[in-house]
Length: 114
Length: 120
Image (cartoon, rainbow over all chains, first blue to last red):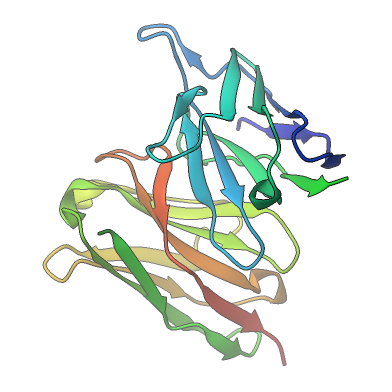
C-alpha cells in the first residue's frame, strides 16, 4: 500500500506571509501514460467536513482562491498558501488516488496564525 | 446543488451493529463512485470503503474488512454502510463522500458526517 506522510505536523505563520506544507508518498503517484500526479489536497476547518482544494496535484477546484497552489511530481509534493489569511486556519490533508484501495491520506498539517 | 446527508449514527456497545445511510441529491448518483471516510476524535482522515458507480465493485480498508458492508440504491440515491462487530476503535465521525466520476478518485464533495460512538 502507498503511505502518505506530511510535514510539518503544524506551523504558525503571520498574516500575509507564505505557508508551505509538504506531502510525500512512499512510491511514485505519477501515471506515465497521462503524465498526471494522482494527488489531491483538502482543507478542514474546525467542526466542518473536508473541502477539496486541489487535484492532479496542482489544479484548483472551482472557487478556491488563487493564493492556494500545488506543486511537485512523483513522490514529493507541496501545498503553498502565498499570503495567509485568517480564514485559512485549518488542517490540510493530502491524499493519493493512484491506487485503490486504499485512498491513503497524509496525517494532516495544522496551520495557525502566529 | 450537491447535498449529502448522513444519518444513523449513535451510541452502540462493543460487538453491536449500526447501519449508516447517506441521502444524495443534486447530481447523477449512479454515475459516481461513493465512499465512506471516517475521522476519530482529534485524529486524521481514514478512508473506509468505496462503491463504484452503477454498482461495479466495492473495496474496504483492512481495518473494517469482514465487519462492514457498503451498499447503494441508485433508484433512491442512497448509500449505506452496515457496521457489525463494532469496536471502540471504530468510534469516529463517518463522512459520506462523492468521488469524481465512476471510478474512485478524489472526493469533490463531503457530507457533514454522523457520529458513531462505540462504548459500554
